[in-house]
Image (tube, rainbow, N blue to C red; front, side, top):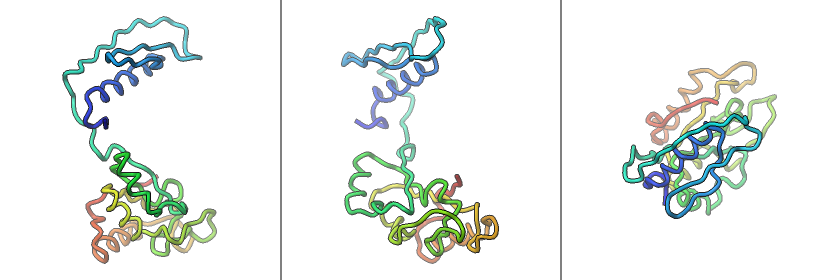
Length: 186
């Protein structure tokens, strides 16, 4: 059962988070919906008394689909494997981030390459158009991480104009809806 549709799942998350704040670890979760917490090794030996109550009959909300996502990488030779969309749908991935984390500051979307003079690589197949196609097959929202770390010439930082050109390329030229997609940076 997915957490988004499970009051029990949300209660477990809340219970574990509250326990973590108190220096406790979930040690047993029983089928009768009760749990046992144990002190985490290496935590303070100060005794803390706490009561955590969970009302399993009342939900506080639903975790949105976009709360569960994955970072993708332009250098990943397996990113576009035929099995990937099915596997990502099976684990309910709602967001796919492209072109990755730190790589995004040296990734040049217009050439699907790494900035001249920077370390790193791309897989020739992992271009933006194929990423968008794969995200659609998954049913995930693309989260584009724009490059503000370097320009195409490798002699300065990224610019808002270069980022805007990517959005225009995606939305106007290819109608990928990039203007309605979140855009982030590392």
